[in-house]
Image 1 (tube, rainbow, N blue to C red):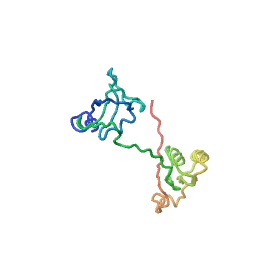
Image 2 (tube, one colour):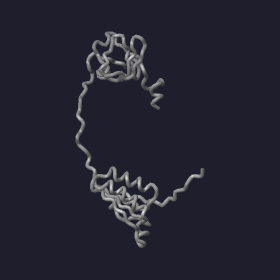
Image 3 (cartoon, rainbow, N blue to C red):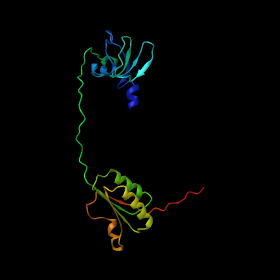
Image 4 (cartoon, helix red, strand yellow):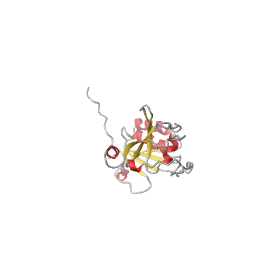
Amino acid sequence: MVYMDLVGFEGNEFYFFRPDQGWGTQNFGELQFHFMETVPLGVRNSKGMITMNPPLDYVLKDDDDVIVLAEDDSTINYSTHQVIEPKTRSYSTDRADIPVEKHMIVGWNNKAPIVLREYASYMIEGSSVNLVVENLDTEIKKEFEAISSKNTQRFLSLREAERKLKKSIQKPSCDCFKSEIFSRNIPVTQEKK
């Protein structure tokens, strides 16, 4: 779509443009404020060398052609004075308030440690991730503790689901968690060589 707009006969096209009166002391960075519906993209010098997006402080020579993007050559209206007044605006120092989050992960597989690390890396202090597993073995506990020890500003909890809770935990009935992830134990298989 963009390609057809640029090289087709409909929409905008590329043109070389040079004003009859020359450029004066115009630099490329200021040039954009001297056109209303035309976008300067580059420069072709008198030797035919083309430079796309030259430095903003490049002073145009009177025999330079500017490469512009315009709807038609009849719509290229260059003005010797600025037709648009540039305004410098400061960046906002306002930041969005990031809420404390509470997540629950049910189950363990080879992706669970990655998910835990990702959650812990972006959540703000005071947030929590609750991990509930069916069978809490030493390997899971060791990996969980390694992640938890590196993220002390976030609360990471690990519990083994009690037998009577296993069925009810499949469908949590509260809205107390921002997200719930249900992870099945996916066996890791070795590829045959």
